[in-house]
Length: 177
Image 1 (tube, rainbow, N blue to C red):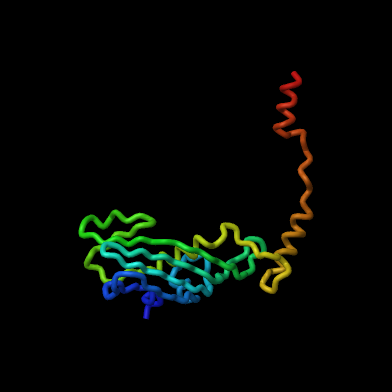
Image 2: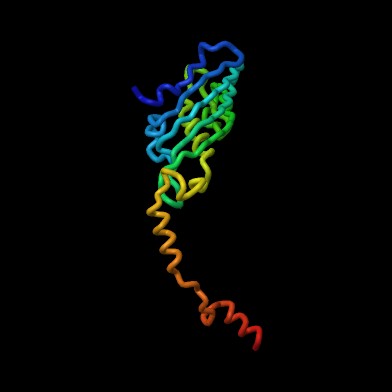
């Protein structure tokens, strides 16, 4: 069975009004996306679906942890994420290429909608741009050897005090002439 089949949302048999769905994200979800930033994780998704005559309004609430690679020590660490997002799905017989980031257009003949990619995007957008452990070197999953090597390599560098070839020195000489 395909791991993302669980995220096919059947909406044709639902009555008009609000409906809630819960999803549990685990490692198999992240493995389905080959180039995912997070390779493992444990998240809970609460989806509130409001069905109307011509559209669906999907409100996602994501809470959980994903494991990321620390940009400083290269160790894996858990990153707590929390995100909310909304997606609007409209039904139309006309041109289906009018979809945007916030609005998806489906044919009126559709009976289910795959929400896996939207959940994937919400999780990835909740991940911080720079991934760094909260306490580098003090946590069990932090790679102490890498941190020590960075420290020794950065401590051995000579500060660049050579101002004879500095562009600022050339500018000062122009001013003095």
